[in-house]
Length: 310
Ligand SMILES: Nc1nc2c(ncn2[C@@H]2O[C@H](COP(=O)(O)OP(=O)(O)O)[C@@H](O)[C@H]2O)c(=O)[nH]1
Ligand SMILES: [Mg+2]
Image 1: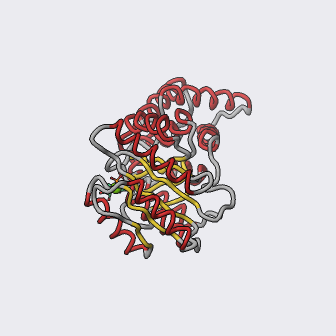
Image 2 (image 1 turned 30 degrees about the horizontal axis):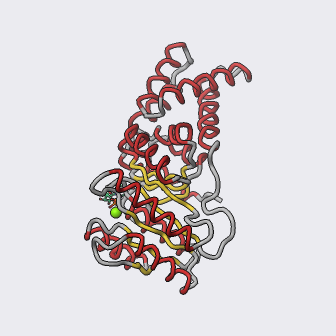
Image 3 (image 1 turned 90 degrees about the horizontal axis):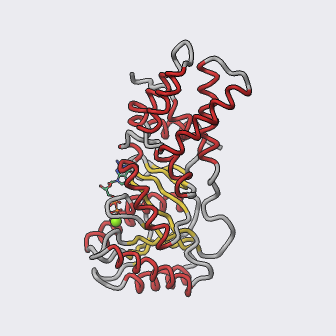
């Protein structure tokens, strides 16, 4: 299923991650032998890459155990085991995006200001369009006037309709109208943009919860996905924010944005383990096609790919 193009794109998007920590991890396995020092260095590098302490320790334990079991001695063989364990770690929480058949899908997109929500929504809208889905966008970030305009610009570019009210309007009313419009236009999916900051965090979470309940009343089991956009450059901080959203609004999956700017791709591994959430999409740039469905094997291969440019 994964063409060369997609793998190449993921490799390009991860160039920065690879040039820093993961490149150094790959280099460890270019040595002639694996010593106690190699394992220590591996541990240090994984932690530096934001894999997280607990995950790192478990991971190394698993790799060492497996290496002993299959009597792997060469660095190459051990590198393969590490890659397999990384893929296993990433696969634990994976599932299909929007599993199940329904007439109208409601996708709520949440996250702090500047994490990449609106840009990701444009990319997700295009992804749906390319699959032949009818898409509507709801401009429920009414807190900042510019946010509505920004979504409308993206909507024009992608060629999808945006349902919007005036700045400061009730976001719940925007969602209500967008879902009505989605039903009457027989759309397949309504994607809801939301605010990332209000006067207080409490207000924000309450607003998101209200949007959820409006969607729920209008459409059976909506929202069908509540996607949290995380900025990969913010590392551990993003994980802490994520926990607040998980507790307040029930996240179903993660969009990991700005992986292209992040030296610490290791966050990807911490998300599954610490949040128990699947990563559904990754964004690796500001263009519409800097976007991929998350696939553990493609991702790990891209992390360890040789850097042709060096
Ligand atoms: N490098 C890079 N920049 C991104 C990516 N996604 C979004 N951005 C930029 O991050 C900034 C904030 O994005 P925006 O979508 O407005 O975030 P929002 O406040 O969460 O809606 C903008 O300048 C975007 O162009 C990405 O994947 N890579
Ligand atoms: Mg926005």
